[in-house]
Image (tube, rainbow over all chains, first blue to last red; front, side, top):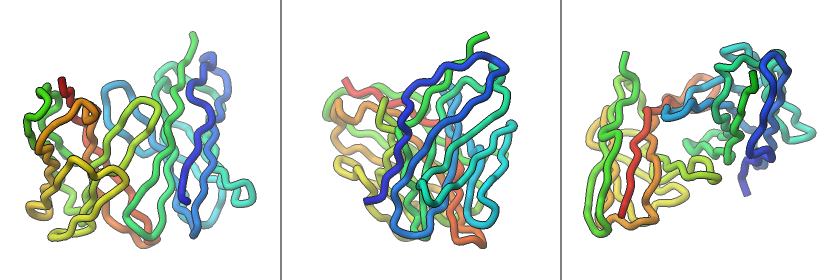
Amino acid sequence: AQSVTQPDIHITVSEGASLELRCNYSYGATPYLFWYVQSPGQGLQLLLKYFSGDTLVQGIKGFEAEFKRSQSSFNLRKPSVHWSDAAEYFCAVGGATNKLIFGTGTLLAVQP
Amino acid sequence: NAGVTQTPKFQVLKTGQSMTLQCAQDMNHNSMYWYRQDPGMGLRLIYYSASEGTTDKGEVPNGYNVSRLNKREFSLRLESAAPSQTSVYFCASSERGASGANVLTFGAGSRLTVL
């Protein structure tokens, strides 16, 4: 079955600290992988995506993610978190079909 | 540059009432989607339309109907609302890129409460 697991429901980091949000997926074919961010009361904004090629992808707002096929993971990282990064983050997987499967999200809080 | 526009942003219904959520996109995308977002459950696909004139069920279609009115518009109808349909609804659109992947662009959401 196709699925996405985000094991951390809620993470709190201090401003300036590094961040890693975990994402594991189960997908039968070659996956397309995405990270979206949702600020309170807003829609989802695409942070970055992986289709093929270099397994380390760069996104907006200083975020990056690394695709590890052997671990079925696509973890999101940022070297130094800003207070404005507080939001909910969703990992998603899709393929050649139109269906995108989302994880349950990780809520990030940033302490001053 | 509007992107994906959803109306209304907020709605309160009584059990048994009907309503339609409207969605329009101005990016000339072929595919459109309706998702619902519930706490702790992420986003779940209700229905999608791969192209004008086609619609398909997603993960949670029961209690909903959709209409792809034209290439721009994709509406979601609740014929007889139930409290279990209290949720935030997101419309999205996409175009398949050269890689074969669909990258979704989302609307701002519609918060629906059913009493």
